[in-house]
Image 1 (cartoon, helix red, strand yellow):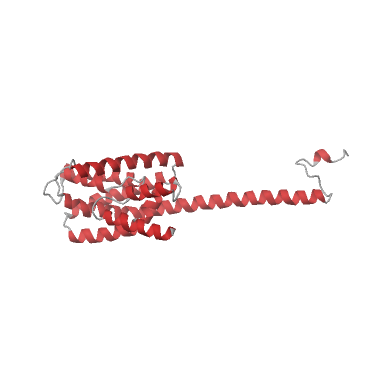
Image 2: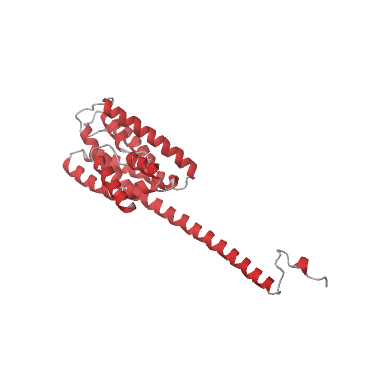
Length: 242
């Protein structure tokens, strides 16, 4: 049942992802509601789990919608750089900080969703690309969005607002935001996976160390019952003086 639930969750979340709603907020809300995984694993799960569908979306939208290559490539590269640095930081954060970050992410996502429903988001212009200082500004902002995405804050809605405010056609945001996510999510996923492997190795080592200490204590008790050594922690105290 858990696998069926995960498949349905991925299908529904990524269906709405193609509409520009984003998959992170809906997936996080369901994971929290069902308590499927610990909070500290949610950012990594989002980035790893939605990577392949996002790559598919990016291929479709970059083929169907025209955007000036310089604008597309530079903003995508900035998002990847931000995602690489952001994943390195988020993967090392303690549980409490991730919980706070996820709470802020859900509040931001809810606010953007409401703004989209009531029509507060900017209508945008007709441009399919940016240049000069405006492009530099867009690249810097997309870098920050890529970093924040590793905390579970979706890139879609902020990127849509960004390009619309800068006078671009909102439709042009789709290949930019989807290509950004498609490229940065595999990069960030590698860091999350490596961090999870290190964490698992440490836990295994701690369990092994605990088993060894327990086994040693059991062997000691058996020897004490046989009269070979005392059962107490200090054998010297029980030994007769020489």
